[in-house]
Length: 296
Image (cartoon, rainbow, N blue to C red; front, side):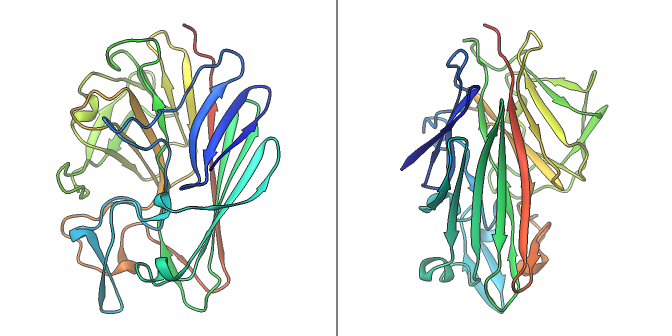
């Protein structure tokens, strides 16, 4: 079921399936900012990645001498979440462990996802709770897809990504076929904190940017108008658009977790950037998306 929150600046639709943002429109000019999920390119809009981010080696993880199969990005994005609270400008959803999840992921958890409007900004809040008696190991991440181009151009050429405070970006790529993270440290040079997006910019890989290098990334059109600004405080984030498809959107993804490397042979608790909650503890993090005025 879809729910609506709105204020004088924005109207947002969130689906209880996955607690996923499906639409964000400007109230001033009715401009849509979010990708609409055309399966020709990618059938999702803004899934929440939980309890895994990225691909697992051999599509499985190991815990207490047992192998558990698991698809990319976990299962929360494909499950119905319960709407627990709503006002005109905010909404909260909840997903709890069940017999279904315990067979795939043997941990008790409560995942709460909140969306709050403030002017032209949407604040996204994640709360993960451990109601059990044993530690819980998990990853969580965002995957919002923003329309790009926005003026009817044939591709994203001339659009720019802005990285606050950076003169260059250090990143790791991934093996496109397997999704495994690559260890090579690559450099994306910037001019005035920006890089121009070319038609083949995203054909190379997913850009995984580690080390908390910046807390703000913006998407700008060829005229320099800001389309969206992402602000976050995560250990890493990713930039992605489907490889080789010239897809009319791109994703800016704050992550608390990452795909396995090809040489990873550890257990769940040893995965890169894994988070651990002791019994009774809560993990709470947030990020914001601010939507700027785009001139036609």
